[in-house]
Image (cartoon, rainbow, N blue to C red; front, side, top):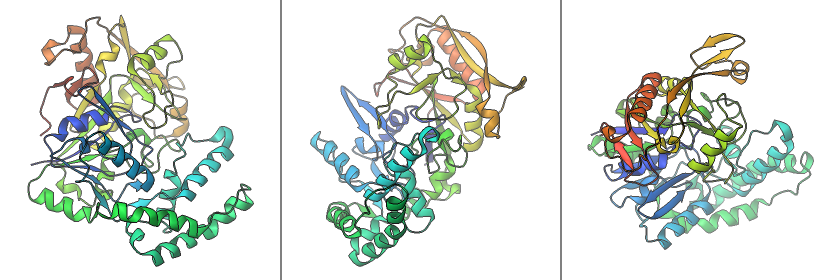
Length: 427
């Protein structure tokens, strides 16, 4: 049985939650392996809509064990709030497992995130202000607080004091902010310990045993390929690795155990926050995509920037992730356009470029080269098979598949759980 990675192939918000949930009934474990509550998944089950930020989408499937891996940064208040909200709606959350090695977002991480972003002014990155970046920075600097530290008050106090020695100097002397009390931080964190303790496990051991026993394990990335701290549009990226390699480091499961890597592609392109975006639209078409597609951030509520499909980015995602399949979402949003532009290459200083430029200055100056495909007006939300789609919609999908370099194995034709065409099985 397979171990699969499912990740965003653009700048995030591609519909990973729906794809994960679709597979959730067939898999035994769904694992978040990076990011924190700066990510957001919207999953529609029947007439119920669920907005998940930190929890794996598989938590909505009763036979699936959801796992928060060691590569995730966890805000304990957000975790407990999400769990409580789902329980109030009748969702069983008792099977959740949280890695004891995952790092904790503390109040001082959130404070630093917000004041630093304000200080940057026009040079701001577009962070969500939820403390994600500072938490990952502390992890790399080896002054981070881990979930397991909640259960040893002495160690927790020592670590918080060590972290605040420098941070309080920065807050007071650079940002003119009041110093943060280490004891207050510790008291707040200890207040979460008993509520979280029952979920904490050696998740790397659990997952490796599951794969060895033939269980199906699905690794779920937050954000998207172009937001990867190493392979994205740096510095306008997140602070972790949403790409396929991050699934291994963020879970403790080795690469030889992963069988398939599925990239989620939106039938057009969106991004949230600052940074280059070659196909971005500033006209009525962009506003129509935002309105019809409901392009507002699940976590932040911010308007998403909208543009046409970018095949250069899709090819890049195929390459850096080793994608075996694509899941194409929101095809229904494009219904009604007479013709649909698709970016097939860039023009940079008068030259045609068909691969993503590694030089950030070139990418900032890239202009899209478009091909135009005929659109369709028929309602496709009731389509159950590929042949049910109108001819022009089928041609659009096939063109995107040819340009992107991997087969499109599923197509989203509406927001509902059942509004998906399965072309090839992922399992």
